[in-house]
Length: 109
Length: 115
Image (cartoon, rainbow over all chains, first blue to last red; front, side, top):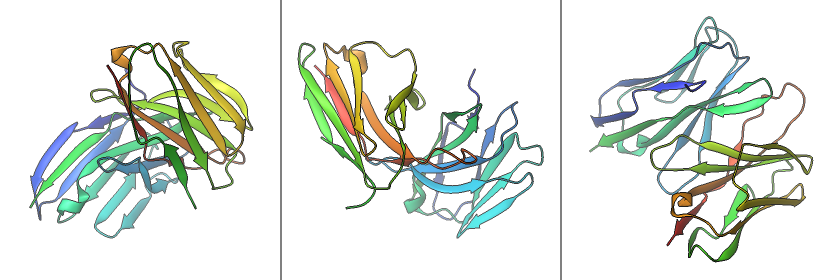
């Protein structure tokens, strides 16, 4: 089993729809990061959440860190084709950096 | 030039060849990483160098040999690879220290194909 479980694994939606992806664990983290990886490129950091219950917004993207700091969600409002990519959550745990398996999002025009 | 640069972007090699992947970071970071990303697997951490010392080697076969001559450069030397080694190899760097929560900055990877 992985330290960070992401769901869904794949998501294909129409432009304008809303969606939420999840990153879950049974472990507690001091912080958690979200990355987006576009085809042919490396992952790029979107946000770091640190405080339990914290909500951060990045334009149409809303990130939430669970109260118990074990899970996180990413909500995208009115998805656009430019949001297409692989969304990865990541966290430090006992001085090691772990990535989730990712959610592959395809937004169709 | 800024960020993390990987060369080459694409590499096709036979199983008996020897080649090297190169990574260079211009961010002043003190840690560098090699990851393997396959189509149906999550990112796999291969090696970690912190302050130019290898601090992690995640059971990677000896046909992969990393080298970190200084804090800005990282190499992955390849020899006698297998077809299952075909993947995207990503390099990353970060600053290690303090609260240890510094994000990783990635290059765009080398797409490796083994014939």
